[in-house]
Image (tube, rainbow, N blue to C red; front, side):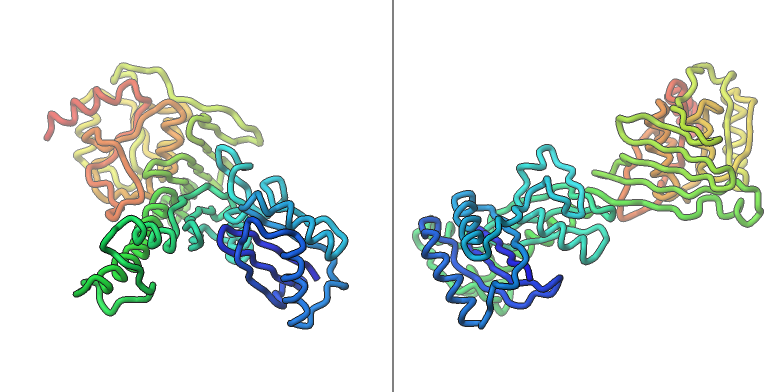
Length: 398
């Protein structure tokens, strides 16, 4: 059996586990000035009342967000089972990675919540813990703790309100009959309960929008059907509506295009990695244009000819951006309004890190994780040096 102790700001929770099964748990109020002997008497009394013995206990785990009681319970556990407890910290292998500025400063309660939730569900999530403080923490599908939000808890908010507002009084925290209160009591209940719930709902929505994976499992469906071999798989990680990680996999050629924000763009081909970048060509007649194999319109053909580019090649899927990122072309133009976020997210990161540029055909920056997933004004991808020239020429057509 394992003894687990969680010291929180309001309560100390003690549990007995047999493997991963919780056999029994108890809750004590957190009292900073209680002695080891007093706590030990309480714990032994609860164990005795439930007919539990610690003789078969093989070890103990201690998590604490109250430094004044950490040593108290550490000594208490040693007195009771003859062993030092394992103390939760960022240095333990918790089954998650911690991606924060200072992992040692992340509360142990938040780490345990994240580790337990990820162990249970193995997916991306926002973990909400309504305690003395309310925490909302983000864990990715790969088990990376990204940080989160800390807010005042419901009870603290209520107590502060009652103590500072002279004409308001304490009420029971229970669900009001309706949102609009017809008296002070009902109005207070409504504000506290619905206000608190609204805060959590709003923050959860904002956190899930802040970071999201965008995946296109088959880009280039027509090329896949026609067996041209020019289809890809695209994966992007978007943060604050901008792609920060992009991967394009070209299965038939065993090739990868990969980029991470501020880390550059790379290609894996012929069993080796190499850094890639766009060309330095700045004259339109010298540029090479890549277009869609299946969706090239007459408007696009006429425009490419009008700006003086004669070197044109058709190719399928996101390979067009891969070619520009690798210095094998300079321009890709499409005026369709049918391009969707998953068609561009991964390649957007790659072209940006390779030194190029991607916008819509009006020069607007592309954003992701929007309600409307369509890019309404086409897409322009270049090596960056000719981008503004093409935009100016295109605006003359409007």
